[in-house]
Image (cartoon, rainbow, N blue to C red):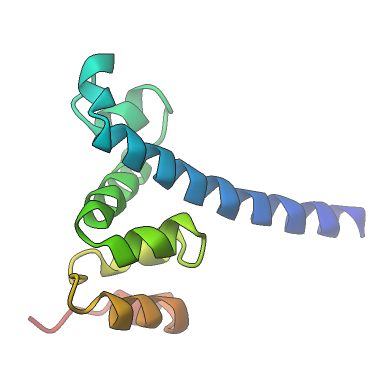
Length: 120
């Protein structure tokens, strides 16, 4: 049972850490810190400093960039209401005008449904 409890604790910690990391990366973008640190942006920083995979770097970069444009998305991700995995799936279509609807879809639909091609 202890392993089960530990797994649950770690999963919750992972979710919180992911949300906090998005928040920190957003602050770094807004303060233009990457250039002063010698990086071109979120992707290169995540890859070189945080040693994430290219896929992970891409997820963080896309969600951070979209969050800068769509405040509702930023709030949903940084509060932990919406995971990085789910938020990255709506990045191609989320706008200020439709953010509430897409965030709700991302929270409620199975991820395979969020992978379907978007109506253009």
